[in-house]
Image (cartoon, rainbow, N blue to C red; front, side, top):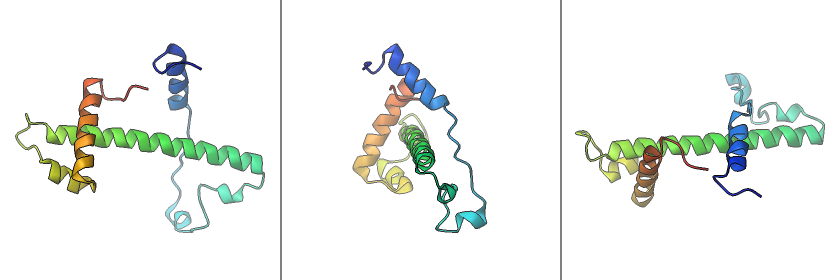
Length: 122
């Protein structure tokens, strides 16, 4: 098994990020149907269903991770003491529906991301 940060690990991460995850937006009338979810209900073959649902799970995880990074970067920028319009931690927490403790952690995470060029190290 490769160590995080090794060339092999970075290659695997790059492949995963470049992998086309077909998170297709569903038409509004179909999305309103509780029984419909990315057409998974129409797949009869359990092997195919497992494969497609796994792809979606991985894609949603990746999307959530990336969105969290963007939240952290935005929080760090909004809390930057050099900004004339900076927001206090309490206001950032309220906007993001976080506790103040979590907002502090996210601001620090965002600062780390900004120092490292905008993305978390694998």
